[in-house]
Length: 347
Image (tube, rainbow, N blue to C red; front, side):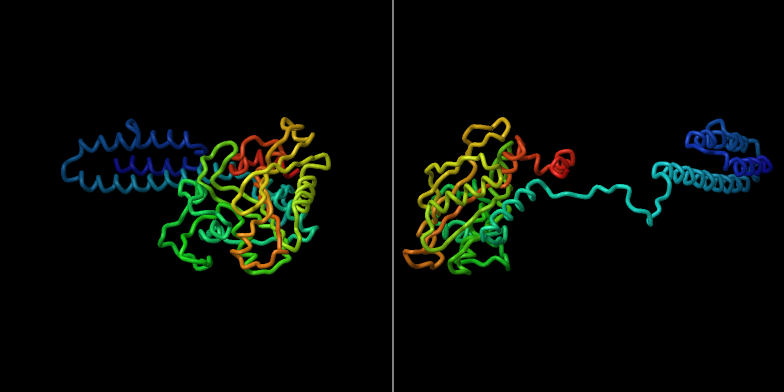
């Protein structure tokens, strides 16, 4: 029986290199250690051995089994490496140029943002930025928003816990921290830091407690502008917005100002546009943004004095412009990282 054990081991070692697939390995193992395998038959034959010989022979069987297990594992590892190599293909020469010559591209929202920035840079506007975490005073009080205004309610605005501390966000008073609902707070900080004349734009991400659907998101991007100087008028506001919207939608765009209300501007307007090149929305009036003349109470908040000082302000959603420009009917497409969608804007 010892000779049979050695013969099984010798045959297994000699057959190892001929096994070229996992099914072949399974069949090979079954022929040795399966229910009808050669090793199994020898182990069954131990019953016929004398009692005193069984322990010694059992040790020899265990040694052969260990060698066989090592051999099986070695074959399995070889087959797995071979299978992986087939999947990976031929080795790559790192000294060769990349076969994929297509580069990355800017997100469609970034494209719109940069286009709007470049357009207003041409007429003297510069970009200012601020933190996305803000305080009630800069986001509401300084903008003439009363304490009972719906925008200050927790069902509309995302507040931090009262014990939250930000080392890089200064407070005016003992107000709470929140995620900014508009980038108008950047305008307030800019006016506190500078004196007129001021021409700034504040693009950035803002947050509101909105239910997400095809036209709303709790996190979106806003683009605001502020122009403060002596004798700034509604005529300047209309001319500025015509210039911006025509640069975005073409010279055939027409705009109108429709009276509205915002706490931080007086008078306030909604801006509508009509254009022949907006697909399904062509040749119909569409609301696109809010604007107005800066309310004198806002100037009081930042310490601007003098009746000759006046200013204009406007705010527009970058997603809104991108959706109109490209005929996108669901705002969520911009956030889903679907390359099939994004690659359409980088040709």
